[in-house]
Length: 278
Ligand SMILES: NC(=O)c1ccc[n+]([C@@H]2O[C@H](COP(=O)([O-])OP(=O)(O)OC[C@H]3O[C@@H](n4cnc5c(N)ncnc54)[C@H](OP(=O)(O)O)[C@@H]3O)[C@@H](O)[C@H]2O)c1
Image (cartoon, rainbow, N blue to C red; front, side, top):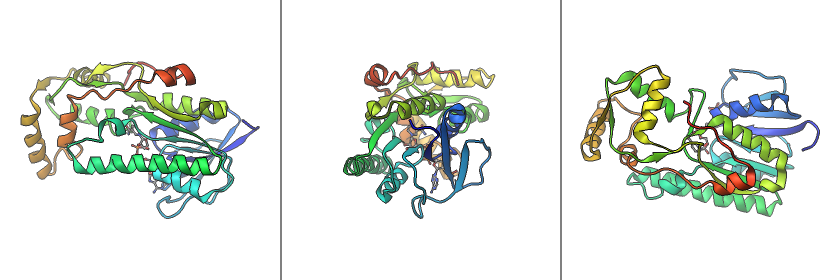
């Protein structure tokens, strides 16, 4: 990288974005960080730009773009085409699992994400931009993610947690993704490509819930129920305004293995994620 390279960071206020800003504090990187909100934290190397990317791309010229928010924003930013030579964008391994989800909204969301990945690859190819696309499984870390934090919320609220399956999980810590992003920025074209990423430990869904409870200082009671029994209960709770953050499709997925083979990333990018420590 050049001396004091300037990087435009989308999704800078999310879990991975915040870890990235923390990690680049001592690197020769200056960040222009986009968020719609007033920033909660400041760093000397970061300039915050309060901007809604749904309205239009950020009016900023940098050599590199790092995207930790919705992929569509990375695409419009690239299409605006102002001096970019390098893009690192976070997509999701969920496209592998939720493509055939029984939930129509999820199927649509995954189809849109795959379309967006394709469009981003084309847009970068047409402009000679080096693209690294990172596709992790579920992300956790810093208490603001929608996965581990959501289960932590259930553990605190409910006297027992219903469990409908023993599918495998490999949660990825947000800071491991931030570290990899910095390494990819430094590696340049050597890190180009699409990379599936899993966390450093594979565990069953019930074991993951137990670990999350233990991190909250609780020993959780798991109630094993078949999904055909749990789903109507979830639907009924949602109708009365409770359990809004749990969907019937999520119950079905508890029995599914949501893991990916990340051997290429381990061998070629040096991806070395930590074990699951919520
Ligand atoms: N959550 C997971 O477990 C997971 C797993 C694998 C991959 N991913 C991928 O990670 C990426 C981020 O996902 P996410 O779950 O963190 O939620 P998200 O809603 O996709 O992204 C949230 C971030 O994007 C910013 N953002 C959203 N809309 C914006 C807008 N209109 N203008 C400016 N900034 C905007 C938010 O900033 P402000 O709210 O501060 O404006 C926040 O920093 C996605 O590509 C997703 O596919 C997520």
